[in-house]
Length: 140
Image (cartoon, rainbow, N blue to C red; front, side, top):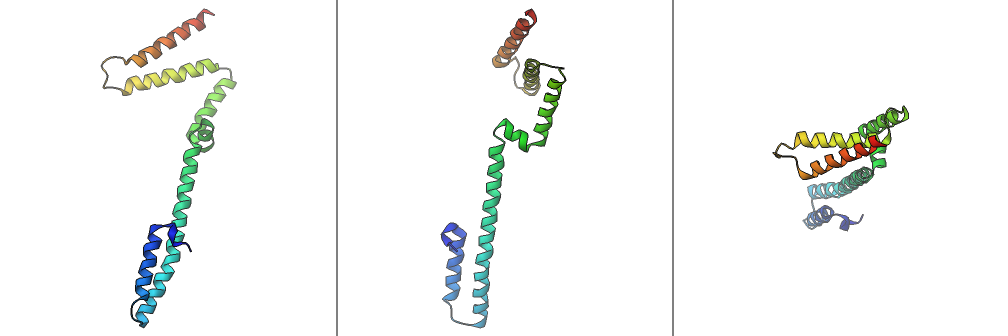
């Protein structure tokens, strides 16, 4: 066992050494034995903690990309599958789906940003771009 792996293992080793330095007695031998066994339990705990952290980091990395979210997040997958179904059924075009997603986000921002008394310029610009895009699309 490598006690340099974790600070608590170092401290526990020091405790075992301090117990060993005491005068011999039956009680002290029992305490020393229990302290030594605890070393292995501490090491198991540290390994399981490390494994849990690695799993969390793996999932976090997987959720950074849209494909990772699709593979690991059930609600995200359902949303993507619903949109794909609408596209396959030819109910909407990819452009219309993108427009609708942008508009939904704008609506959400407008409803949730009560601190603004006027339309923020970025939202206003986005609405203008969306309006121009719709005009271009309808003129074709």
